[in-house]
Length: 620
Image 1 (tube, one colour):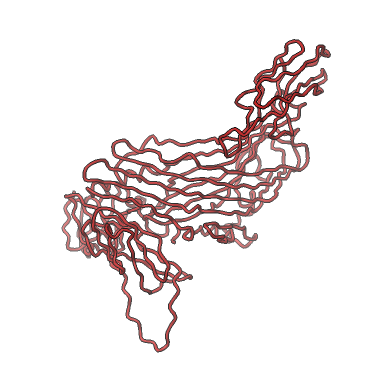
Image 2: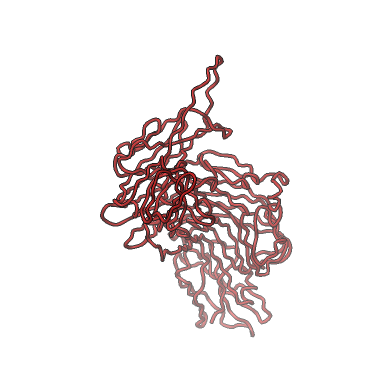
């Protein structure tokens, strides 16, 4: 598996990119040797073109593949080929492909029981005005000008041919010796020593094909995942099986000089916010990544009559666990915040359908608010899980529909603060959480586009204070603990869709989901009539929820208390009532006579986080 952007990749057909096969490999006759040599062991096999577009009825187009040993050396061994649907795309064992009818198939290469990742082969019918140029007349691969996105609609390139008389305005379809597509509208030509240099403009597929149908789902095997050189330099990566990988930070000084920045500003994290960077040290955490066995599904219909349609879907269930150990906060936050995200993403690379794909995962921590002074310790463990279901469904009449589901899972984490001071007395507007920033990107020859971006996280917003503080400051305290997902599922599909079926995409929404979570109960009102105080609880806040379930799991009121504040500011609990489950109205007995200057307050002791009463308000 090649890393992203290491060789030209095209976006013209997404899964069935306009990559056509070229002459197959030849095996030289072995030199006689009286001493038998052992057969080289094959470690992996790769198709030289991730996809193949054929003209219906065309025979003998060769598919190529290369075998490698475990050191990455090319092996000269016999390779066999196979089609998943011979009735549509027939492939001989030697790799000669014949397009029998309109449709698609998956092609694999194998040797010694080792199989390549599948490539997509598609067969279509050209429009009547398209000229099919024999591949033997194409001398060089397409050359795009610097800064031009290759194989996008409207981009221009040059190619050199022999024995061809180009006519401006004509539509061409062929392939170059390296298998890359030669297609589009002829703009101009000029004589060169080798033959004729032709300038063409890339056009949408419906301009070339009157019929083209692709309907394939390909599983990207976890063993084909690779990681960036920087990630591998900073971490010892150990496969755990079943698509899981463990990342352990290398000892300081082992990483090359370019990675020494990982040793400061919270270790491997980059931190930003209003809190000084020197105030926190997050150390060198360990990660465990499960790529989630991703799959890609594509359906492309260009019928002779009817609506052009494109449907693309990416599905995976990645998870990432970060164990950060115990670290130190050296300053009072004083309503400041800090967000730390891993510097170098843990990247899972895939290459299929003629595309280079990479899932970038960056775990992080967020802290904020005000919670006392002095030195505190922080222990952070996060576990991120997300069901990534990203896709779009487009046609020329109605634009694109969003197929991305909002079930991007949860991130669960534990953030524990300790050290000097009484946290519960000093915490105000405390925010703590862990999150996973994820980007699914597609690589082209000269650029990289974000196809999907989302941040999935676990967030706790806490406003805690002692009863004295709540009563005297008028801040009733409270909390909310739950999950969140922010999704931009269409960061780069506009150019993809325009390339494939010529549709301009607009109005595709972003998705923001606040998952159900634990919320503190609150008091709506408290009124006194004679010797009775009537307390009304917010009915939407008396039940609590888990961080993963939308269902009510229980009544979250342990007790309602009546408080008295003296003229000097001291607070005394006068009475406490345990309400019946589900109650939203609670009554408490009130004293007939009150000392001069004193006032009554009520507060709630919740069942979840019952260490500190919340929602304290004055009785009217």
